Image (cartoon, rainbow, N blue to C red):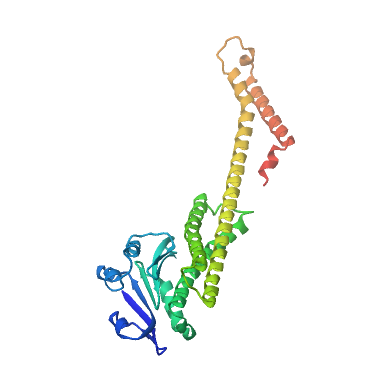
Amino acid sequence: MIRTIGVTTDRELISDFSLEDIKEKKLQWYWVDIGEPTKEEEMLLSSFFHFHPLAIEDCLLRLQRPKADHYDGQVFFVLHTFNEKKMEAEELNLFVGEGFVVTFHFPPMHELEQARERIIQDPNGWERGAMHATYHIVDKVVDAYFPIIYKIEDYLNEVDDQLSFDMRHLSIEQVFDLRSDLLRLRRTIIPMRDLLYRVMNSERIILHQTERAYFGDIYDHLLKLTDMVESNRELTADIRDSQMSINSSHMNRIMMILTIVSTVFIPLTFIAGVYGMNFKNMPELEWHYSYYIVLGIMLIVALAMLAWFKYKGWFNLFKN
């Protein structure tokens, strides 16, 4: 699907015009968005726009790392959006030249629709041309990262608040899933941050002072996103370590109980074993009350050992 928007030399905003109108109309600049392309629409990159073959190859071979390449007075950008449902990066390709912006992507991207609406509502930005439209596109791509990270951060803060008294609702698999999501975000955000740094400091990309300030604002957002991802990864590591400590403490309590039970039954088992031997010369076996006497001795031994354990403070481990 192809969508178009442009500004004429008479400072009139037009939209959804055909590609042939680009040659006929006097446009100050235009933006062509090629989304979910067919084979015929893919061919337009070379047959109509005459972009460099290496850039076209990068468009068709997914997934490239975020970058900026220069071809014959044009700049080719590879950006990454982030799909919240799939929790994976998706590629957005931009061609920026004198008076035009062309975006190419396979999955649908709501960020582009938001950028389109923002451009339409910003008549003061029409005269700034294609690079200002590029700013709106990149800005919306970066802004879309924030809700995803905020959602993860809110969940982690909720877990951290409950950490001191209840960890039963959280499994270790959930923690590792969150760390995996944050790692995917990190692999997307850091290359995007590096890309914006190169754009701002490249001598081959001409940015006016106003445009440099706008792209600098995006770069600041990416720095903030990087810090948020890193801090949330540290928080997941703390939650993971705390959960492992709690599980270890719980296991130690279980082992303590088993140790007490085993220790109490060791002498009882010894007594039962002695009187379970089949020897004839055992006088106690002939006593009338020997069975009850041995049971009483075993009970006294068990109670004495339990009292000794309580005196040593072993049972205090089960209070918390």
